[in-house]
Image (cartoon, rainbow, N blue to C red; front, side, top):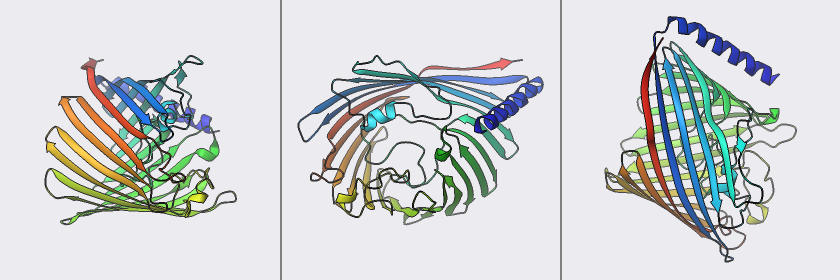
Length: 390
């Protein structure tokens, strides 16, 4: 039934697209490409080490014509490892294209090899604008929420603050309808999945005030009814953020509450401070209970409470240094993160990441490795823009 609805939506949009071309004389087409090269070294407390090399080249094209937009991105994901791969490692988990409604990924790996390679359609969507309304259908990035560190609303990517290594993102297959008029915005979207219980539907109301931005969320995620409020207050003392999510129980899963609050302050143009607090009723209040309730899709971290402070300093216009720590307030283990970014030239960036866990055996961050990684991003090494006339 779901696939039939999708096929009808695609047929409707493609038909409108073809018919509209009779009245369109020009279209703009752009093509861009990028490549990320990353090396990651992990050193575990028990003595083993992992050396990984990641390659992430991609090429994308975008077509704009009157009210239409068509965009696609082809991505190659490659991991070269000099050690046995831990299948639960975040780098490996994000390397494998996520299972979505449309199976567009291709496994190019050789069985038994220390290399893993996948070809994936990272994005492929068609959009149509009707006045103040925008309609999108296909595989496309979708980000919601306002917190910088903790994903209270943003559950669409397998990324948590404790994730380490080079991470690939998996865009969802969705239909997205948005309307905005002056300070009021409405959005409705549905994320498709092969498993009906893994589908997400949401309606979001937004109001943009002079100093306060507010969002109200209603929906059904993973077969549970949810609601939430998010707000951003910009004052002379700094930026305050609030993000909350309330989940109603059903016959199979318990309900709960999650929320995060944050504060950000720029002291000078070069120095700023960020701190966020996170609470989840699905988390454990004792380290002995970390392995219970592990299958709940709303649970992204093991414990109930965390705090994340971070200081950012920009020594030059082309560089920045970020020092932060993710602290588990239940077992007091800490994950210290240092990141240095430097812009080599236009569209060329290099960054260095160092991650040091502090904690005893049995603590959430106690088992994590010391990590050092370097990443080179070279964007638009092939770029073209041209105009088509019909």
